[in-house]
Image 1 (cartoon, rainbow, N blue to C red):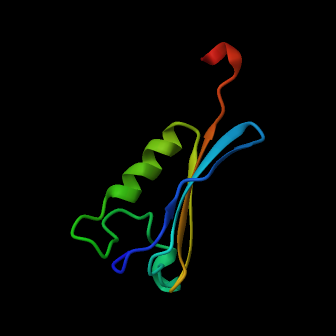
Image 2 (cartoon, rainbow, N blue to C red):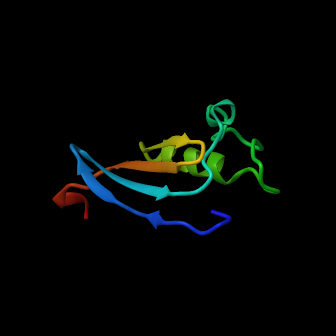
Length: 89
């Protein structure tokens, strides 16, 4: 968010999972890049492994990472993980 903006972290229980989103009001991601943001080394930044590593960790934990974005409106990155039962805490 080069000109500043807002960052929010809403969370919720979603059935048998927990979701936490990272929502920003930044510049957004272009539609041609959006389908590739979770791929290794695909980045507009100097280092392009962060999202690919996060996705790999979530995959191994039976979780997921979803990305939504609109140019000029910002992005939402949603992490979904299985909720722990009382006997798993």
